[in-house]
Image 1 (cartoon, each protein chain N blue to C red):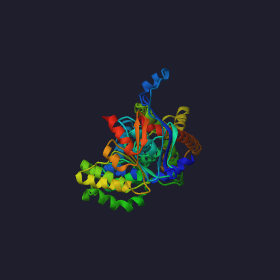
Image 2: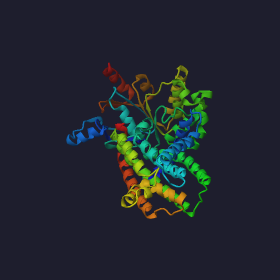
Image 3: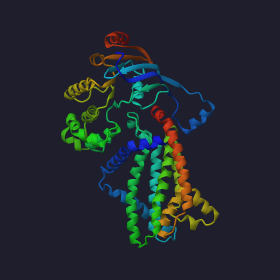
Image 4: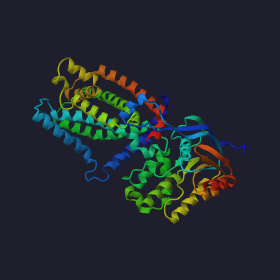
Length: 244
Length: 260
């Protein structure tokens, strides 16, 4: 394992939330007098490495800093201290319906969403047909998204992120969308995407079976600190015991 | 500064496309579609022309065009500014899910409002022909005035976007300030003739919007050269403020997500 190149290096990362930052002008005036700010430490001094091509699962109870960690890796916000190095890989946070506009057609939303994920229009156009096919919503693709059922909406959204691939994928428990058939298809696609050799994946999930089936390593966070970081066979039994 | 150009280059396509998309979605479910972008300013012009031309008896020559030029330029500014206060909250679904240089959202808004402004410019051209106002060589200054306007607008937007995240009632303040500025900028009266003397000159020069409106009118209606000295001064001031605003935004970019 040592000789493998790292795709993601996280070193001593701390992330804080300041709880009273947004407020009215009135509050801001009062704050001049009492500057005491409540600081909530969401992630405390976490370090780990993900080698290229590996799948890391992050688990832990609600509010343990999993999603915060994931967003920090995606670059949506920076760590307050420590550093996150992606070694120049392209990255995307697999999330449903980024930048969708409900008045526009499915086709236009694909472009809009794709561009936000950092693809050029040409690249998106090249994959357009694949996306439409995978989503399997047929004629609805040219109708405004607001007319979609919630199932069609998530199918389209999932297809965009699944087909427009990046080197590192971050997944925040979105593995089950749509009806039974699409669920199967998307889980299959997920596995196919994830198991590609050169792809590095970070999954946040509560589902023990998903984590067991897919991951090479599990990172268990509790209150923003690492409890365990090891192979699923080692971590999962202890975690299951803990959650009971 | 370098980062600004790099980010702009990387994302301007998105800015344009999302601006187009929101334009499209705005009219998607209305009957008259994009005709509203012509109809709306035109109707407002008629209202103002009636109130100020007939009721208050204003005696500007070509009063219709006079108001319309003012309205066009003002609307662009005021819409951009109003929208920028809440822009991050409005785009929460994007901002919390992918990284995007936040000023790109501002640029996209400017394209959005700029495109609407194009329609108004078309009407201005038609009206100029209708009133038989001769086109003078001074039209060449219009791009300069436009650049000043854009940079000044952008400078305002950067600060409002930043503080809009942290101070929730900033919107109320901007509303009042904008309203005040609107009446002070001389959209439906001529600052120079209504307020002669020192006060008038000061008001017309230190208020960039007034300066910009007057400059447009001078170029288009009166065949005069606009006040280049003041335009350049305001351009420089705006560039300085825009860069300061960009610095603040870049510095705080990643903490916005935690607050909204």
